Every structure is written in structure tokens, then in C-alpha cells.
Image (tube, one colour):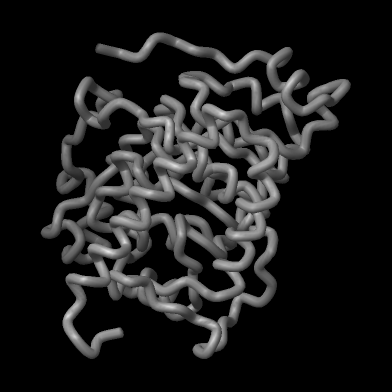
Length: 277
């Protein structure tokens, strides 16, 4: 069943931000509102931080005109196709982007593709983008491969290994029909997105240099990508500072999320081979 349309209105934006007009809005946080349409952001030229996690958005089109946008948080939405990145790849100031927990993030080349398309990104999801990773993305995805994904939303292994000439040939272009989000692509949105988005909205702005010293990097319990101590401290500070603003219901959601996250990390730590920490 398709989600019921929930359109973000100008009045709602002004009420939430206490602004007199859309021209004054710089920061907008609307997580977990069930929004399906946020086209109104096209009328907010000065918006710098947009936190819209745990909604029901299916496209990145509304953000294409937000040239002042620095941070965009879209966890747990319905963005299905990687081709949607075409709408934000030209944003000159976008340095922090969260698309995890969207269907498109499950694509094999998701991270390399987004990094390849968005040259100014310093952080994608909960992992900082390094120069080494950017170079690896360039080696992995040629310009032709990137264009193919932008056109069709995906690329096959055969196409990925094809020469640029083959990919650019009209006869070799795959006939892929993009479809909108369907029932069952993503489960029902849980309220835990609300708690996490609080911490996400400010974490990007606290990072300084692009180069991270090895001593300031902390491995995750699962042995996966690392996060700097600076990022950890920024996230923690943001969470603690926002706790007084939460309602009793939201605090319950946060408590549940923290409990589940602790259990996940403890399980990951137990499953690590001895001596790997």
C-alpha cells in the first residue's frame, strides 16, 4: 500500500523555525513526520542544514536548488534509485550526507558512486570520506560507469568492467525502467529515527581538517570502518545538549534505541576474533 501523501507546508516550516519568512530559514529539523513531499524547500534558498530522517521521501529532486545546503540527513526514507543523486551532485557546499537505511544504500556501488558524484563530501553516513577512498572510487567507477548509473540507477558487473566506449554506445545501453517505491521495499518506519536524527543534525559542522591522524581514529566494534574521536565527541555533545528538549515519549524512544544499539555493539564485540581489537 502506498503511503498517504503528507506535504510539508510553508506555514509548518515557519512555525518550527520561528522565522518570519522562508528567506530567513537556515536550519530545519523534521524527523519522523511521515512526509512524502518537501517541495517547499525549493523556496528556501538559504537553507544550510536539513534533517528529514524517518520520513517517506522518494526523491532528492526538491534539494537540487538548495545551493547553500551543507548538511542533508535522510536516513530511513524511501529513496530507491541511485539515479536520484543527480539532483544533489552539483550542490557546491554539501559536505555531510546521510542516505543510509534507504533502499538505494543497499546497491553494491552505493558508497563509491555517491563519493564520485559529490566532490565536496567530507562525510557520507556515519563514515568520514578520505582522499584515499575518493581515489579508490575513481579507480572503481569510470566516468562512463557513473553516467550509466545516473541514467539507469544501477549498473551490472559486466557493464562495470566494460570499456568506456562500450558503455557510451546506445546499442549497449541497458533497457532499465525506473519504478517508484513499491510496497514491501522498506518496512514500516520506526520511531527510533527521531532519536538518532537529533545527533546527526549538528555532527558534520564540528569537523575541521579533512586529514585525520591515525591516532585519532577509533575502530568500530564490528571491525568495520573507523570514526574519529572528534566525531564521536561531537555526536555525544549534540545528543546530551538536546536531551532536555525531548518529550517523555521521545525520551522513551531514545531509551529503546540506546538499549538496542548497546546490544548490537556488544554482540559484534563478542563475535570478533580474539586479538582483533
